[in-house]
Amino acid sequence: MKYLSYLIIIICLFSCQSKVDKHINLESYSQGIETLRQVDTVGNTDYPKALSLFEESVKTNPNHIESRYWKALCEIHMNKLEEALQTSELTIKKFEMEEHSLMPSFLIYAGIIERINENMDSANVYFIQAKYEYEKRFKKDENDFAALMNISFVLSCMDKNEEALEFISSVKITNDNKELLEQIKADIEDYDIDKALKMLTNIY
Image (cartoon, rainbow, N blue to C red; front, side, top):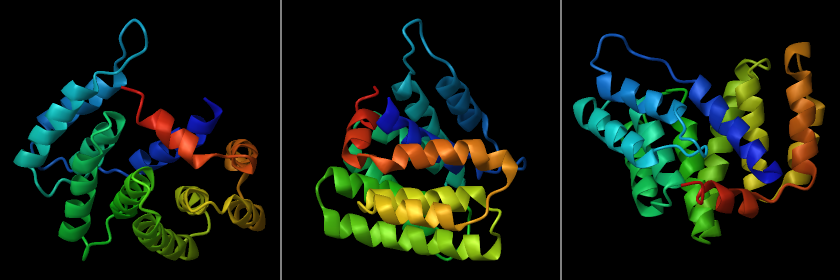
């Protein structure tokens, strides 16, 4: 579970950047989120049901990037990697001219999938671009904890754990985030991204 905990924290940080537009019909999206919150008696989540709801939401609201975010995540959990990569790449292309807070998440998704597929050159192209986007965000606001954590995560995805540790240690963090930061630093020290990704795609 140790290898997966770091990845789960990053995914939670992705979702915290999501904003709901109250002016569009988000019934399927809301039902999908509610499905993800529920677990059965043995702790399993109904990812197929959630995926179908997010697919419907994307059809109804093609410009709702949050639906695309959760759709891709469900696809990754279900080991539907080709579909998740397509979802990510289509979203990157569709929203490339917009500075939506979730856009770098799709770059990380695409990079993760390419890494799982052992296409490291392609993976690093996505990771470098995601890192650049988060660095821009962090320069604007050094209190942006999500940007900080995503920079460190991308570095770990590129097998640069030592650089990730150096980066985290170099910035000033508010007291509210110090405990979480220490946990992350401990995880990074011997973090194995490949083990974490294997666990992530075998949750379903």
